[in-house]
Image 1 (tube, rainbow, N blue to C red):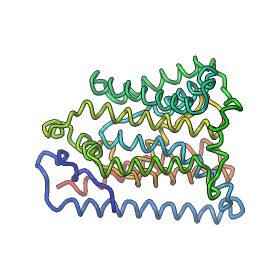
Image 2: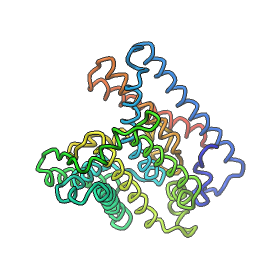
Image 3: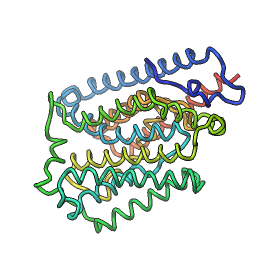
Image 4: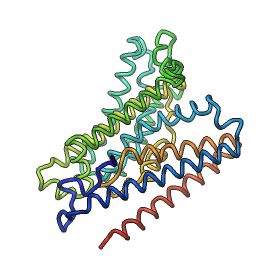
Length: 340
């Protein structure tokens, strides 16, 4: 079953009101989009098998791909909600770094791994609430508010850690076990990522919160007239994004066994790019969790192929930039074709 689109939101029907018969059409478009993403993934897999047959299909490489996708993927789920709701969050990488640093201070670690995990989630959620309040009630442009949070969170992380990497102590190895312990050969952190994706899909597609997210992103004024508290919902969307950053902080602490102010560098670009490639409109009102995850896997595979073939990081960034431009151009073309 495909995920709801803009026309499914009760208040996001546009100026002319709801148009009967459009939902099946948009569902078909969503399915075709997913098929295109799956085809792109298949092509990348074939390229990997052809160019690096001895390294690409190995168990260690596949686990490396999944582990990298897990950390950014949790952030991508939160970013999907924010962008569908008509916003943008540039602070996700810095908030994740701040959460990882706060959770690995000696004071926090003295309370054990459970408190460390709770601390990371609370710090991320708190930063998200600040973003949401500034945007919804302070009426700041999302770009400006989250850009300010990006700078402030990164600076606070540097100040707290004194620009040093903070190691997870041996008595808190339960955090590290999320990366080293495996079930059916797959690290536990990948299962956490899968759980976040499933819960995100249910929240977006099977709850009132999800329907309101599409409505707010599609037509905020119509959503307000329909009785939705747009400002409150916007703040909750950014809090949800921050909570995902906190969960991602736990995963990156498990992978690196550290908390650091350098964690999450450019993660905001990877997450936003994955959401865009997955078909979510930058203007809000339409998008899917499945599409975002497929977009994430495409980006992760591209990064992996570049590393295996010994290509420069600069080449990776150029390729990703071109992909983002093509994705946005395709979005604009599709919108023009659907407009009356």
